[in-house]
Amino acid sequence: MKGYPAGFILILRATLTALFISGLILAPGALEMRLEWAVPWSLEGGTRVWGAALHAASYFIMLFLLGALWTVHLRAGWVRQENVLSGGLLLGAFGLLALSGLGLYYLGDVSLGNLALAAHLLVGLSLPGLLVAHILGAKRAQAHLNRPGRRIEAE
Image (cartoon, rainbow, N blue to C red; front, side):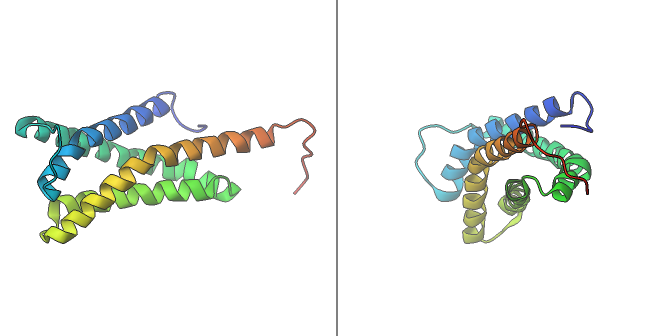
């Protein structure tokens, strides 16, 4: 991505990976505690706390990265009308993950907490697919711009 320091993409990928893996590791325990499902494996108490801390810290870093993406990448894509649908879905997914994550901690009502858990897990599991779709859309748009014989019209 243009306009970002050299290590930005690496930090973004590492943060997304930490978020996804820590979420996958925490999911069985959440299903066991919230929905009382019998799961074959879940993190033990102390380890679960560290896993949740890693997940929360990764999301705080992700919020900073989303702010950095907003200032350049999102605005430029919006102006050029490139990947607007997949970018909007990604942004909406991150917003829903933030809200449902807060709901997991702070909603007192059991049914609302379970709804927050379901939303968080479903959106979190869909995030890699949304991200791949966004990246493939960007590659398709770039290939379209670089095709041989493309006429550049004056504005």
